[in-house]
Length: 67
Picture (cartoon, rainbow, N blue to C red):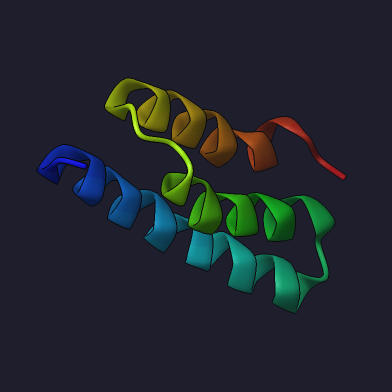
């Protein structure tokens, strides 16, 4: 694990916390799950490129799926 992976993981985890809290307060299922996934997935991904791509997809998910 290098510094860039650590910083990207911190960024996506922070965004995930925001999505999680928003989804919990609004009782919105998609932001809640997206936030939970954003907080957890950096522990399982070792490649920085994959971390950024998966994180960007999970950040865009609540705007693409309106449920």
